Image 1 (cartoon, helix red, strand yellow):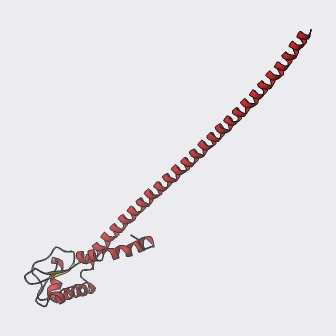
Image 2 (cartoon, one colour):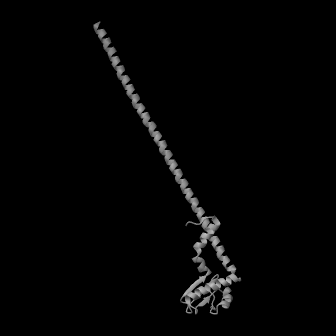
Image 3 (tube, one colour):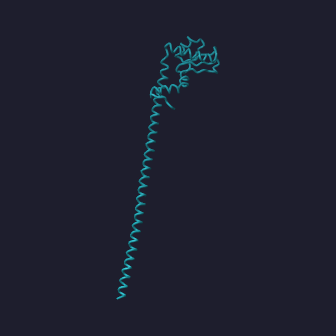
Length: 192
């Protein structure tokens, strides 16, 4: 009986030891699973955050690109409107012909050129202005120049010319005219 009792005690001790080892293994497994679950939760959270940040960044980039495209289209349309307005302004210059201010303008443009080149210089105008120029300046060329208006003053040999034609004056003052038109049409000065 002593052996049986000892055997039972050993079994009971082995059972306790076994239960203790199993309980410890279960606790360690639960800790490992808990840590893994925490890592998984953090990875998912980071992925969501990164995905959200990437989506937000991409959204902002698309909005910025769309804003730039819209600004470019608006600027192109404004520039097209300015170019059309310039064409209208230039075409209206020729409509001034036939009135006293136009005659005074021709005279002042010619005088300016004559001052630069001397009294022997020749005044050249288009065919429509030939009568006015001949009346104002005896040294008006018989040949007409293909210009919208204004005058070209040249030395007798034609080597030196002062171009006071509407085209030349318009080109020289184009930036200033554009700024004025921009302010008139859009209510602000063009910054470019």
